[in-house]
Length: 443
Image (cartoon, rainbow, N blue to C red; front, side):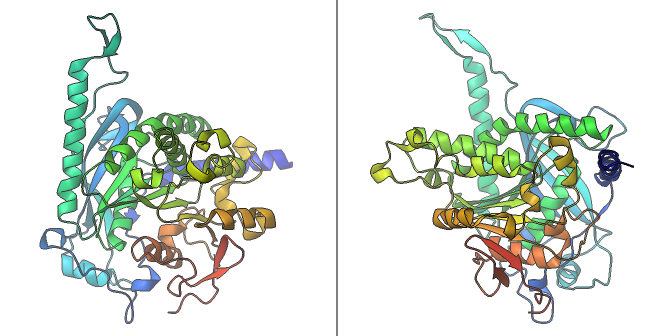
């Protein structure tokens, strides 16, 4: 078998396995190292009685169309909706488990009973008007949006923000955590990951997820290319959702996490929002209230990612009007990238796109000294490389399946620890690069 045939064979094998992963039952992720008994951190200590229950109630936003196949029990499928909807999605812990038992099991390195995830009630709470919005002619002969649709938009937006405020009222932290999934995910699997993260972040935030029509069945090669275009289609909707969340009274911070192909969706949405703010003459960090931006196993080309992250720096005309040639900020916290050279799932992208490298496979030595210095000067950008043992089939979901990585993520999002803080237990390898210490099993 020649090299080209070998790559195609590897691609097909990975594709066939991934195609089955989206419907495989999910066990609750392992307990992050920092919570493990007997000397672990307290997991739940600030929840009101209403939150002390096994299931996790998530806020969802989606541009998936309703599922039309009667044999599929999911509420939303793989095709695109001409607009957004939002609602409540409950993820249950099964088989039946009470709150105290779940608390105890969530602190164990080796659980004494099985805990699986199951999609519960999904309630759609609002739907924005169908796109594109209608255009009417005014008495003056100019074109304008249809007044009825504008009223519908305003009413739905208000309902969306009221739902966020309702959840904020019972949340210890007045912030929103939003998770954006990648390729080969269904509505259910994206909800599962958001619920796991929410659970081990202490259930202290308004927990939400944005789910877009990523293909999870059918011919893998066709599904992947379809997903790539659906990702582009999702950018505009995610941008609108983020803008509305940030404008909701009472929201103090937003924590953004994206996985795999979802990182490209999120970066594109943020790039557009940043340009909007700059054009309006306001600091993006003040408008959008984004604390941390976390890119998990990013399925995006290195050069493209670099352009999206730093493009505004190399576009002087965009920010020339800013005083003293100062650079605007998008984040109040940090940009954190988790990568693993052993991420076999990203081999698919490298083959299909003929990409030299994907961000999710970067090693510290892949970052030149010049770029290390550049990112160090830009500040608050961290590439964290994981080279440990694979804990999932393709080494692509280690942020939940590996207790060391999930522990580091919790330290960042829940406790606000910087990479050099003792709790993170990371080894600096450059001005902007880190790796996990070999001895981080013990604390």
